[in-house]
Length: 119
Length: 108
Image 1 (cartoon, helix red, strand yellow):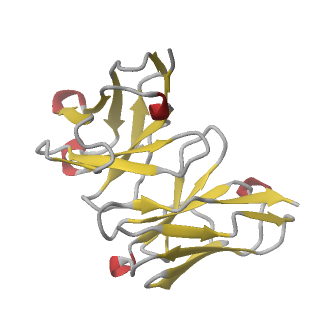
Image 2 (spheres, chains in turn orange, red):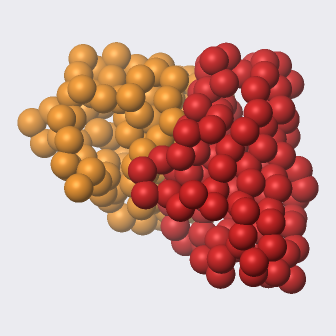
């Protein structure tokens, strides 16, 4: 079945970087987009951006522009999200989700990766 | 930028009752590209409805979506015990894609 499996929880210090992976299976990886969404404690879901798994094109939300980078390894059907210059407000669960295009509903979602930023 | 506002914030109902959740957009949602998700504690969101009214595969027919333009509704005709959760709407018609703040459906 179509599935996205994310890497495990991370604890980072302020100013550090974190890289989260999202491995896809059960579908043709390069025919779809991967979107990233984060959910901070008590906050609404927040769209971060997308990557076209076929050609590597990316678009980032203005809220994350310059601090987030998406990459893909098509040989491993895996997408990566890296956030730099972490601050305490970046503590959140980060989700990857499969989308059929730039604007898309999401099906399925990864299980989520908790990133905790604390000194 | 479209902002989505969901109401009510919390809905207290009993199993078997009807739930009506609202999602209002600050601008018209292009092509009614509006989705609804269900999220339970510790889990990722699950797609229920897309295109405002199309049920995702495997979603029971007690879930239905309606609306257009700026006003959308998710209706759960008869609440089952497993339906008590938080529900989010999402617009994917124009960037940046946005989510509502959620409606919690809790057991009365």
